[in-house]
Amino acid sequence: LKREGPQQTAFHILTEVLSELDKGTKTNYHSFRSVNSKLIEKKVYFNALGFNQFKEFIQAAEARGLVESKVEGLKHSVKRADSLAPLE
Image 1 (cartoon, rainbow, N blue to C red):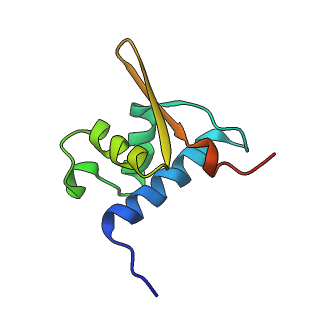
Image 2 (cartoon, rainbow, N blue to C red):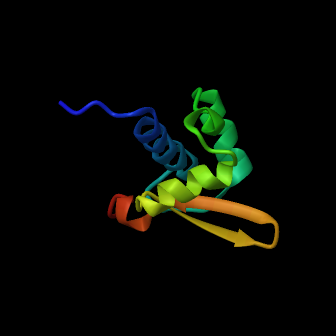
Image 3 (cartoon, one colour):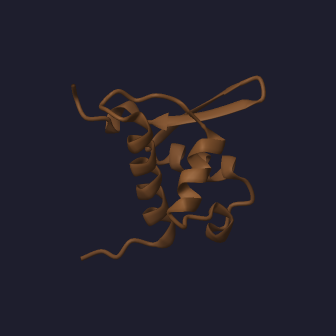
């Protein structure tokens, strides 16, 4: 049995949070602020995991193929990667 490190656990919780915010099977973009608030409620603190910015935490999750992020002007948002979403 492989033990998950704190970052893997945090990424798993991130995908769960995004799934909860989606309220269904379709993936939607959510603001960094709303996602980070939910993570804080679940006691996931990106800075405690070695990231200086929430964006870095999201980019690390994105590099692992877990999420997709976008920037429109100053608004950053993130969603679950479509490959992780259950098929409708």
